[in-house]
Image (cartoon, rainbow, N blue to C red; front, side, top):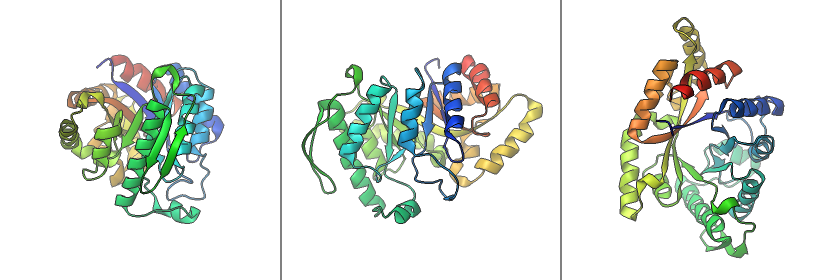
Length: 310
């Protein structure tokens, strides 16, 4: 359990840059391993709320920290051409001295695509585009050159230099659990597989499916870090638990957040026990929403009462 990686997911809607920087530096000071952002043109369902752009924010946070890993849960493949994205990723890898985490998905919000005039398409089409992007980015990271004539993207003998730092590429994180389109891409390309909150009730089944797909490809499933995204409602003591639970229910009670399926509601001993259970299934990374959006008090509790016990 000592190698269980704990990260914090802080969607940046409604936060100023100073507030996001404070959370990043606080995570770093406390020894929390990673901070994760969302990638949307505006807050889903809340277009009039302020929301900082994902890549620019990640770059700024990585430039102002020294040990913290920063990534996106996950980048929208529809927003950036994959050849440019590969160049951006290798550049940020150098800026951050290897701390950038490359999370990517097929896109999830049709409305922002419509408003911005971006192509949407069916899930199958978006998955095809994601597959081509993953091939392009993998070539860039591993060979420093891209050559792909795909259905959606055509890149001819394009160099990507400098290569990633230290001879290792940024970890490719793919989120999702779809057995027809997404998990085959995880099995083929991902270094990290992240299970979103909406699938927390299916962890064992989806893990078994992924392992079977890896076996079909001849890939060792242990070369993929299994990661899970979940809401944590961490109370400092039993007396505080009802109020913490109330806030969590208000903010994350919708079915897509999997608040109860995640099982991370309680005081520190209960949270530690649940993390042991997730590790026993095979998950080596947990990325946490917190019920209060990463307040100082909760980050302190997470570091001192949960991570310290692992």
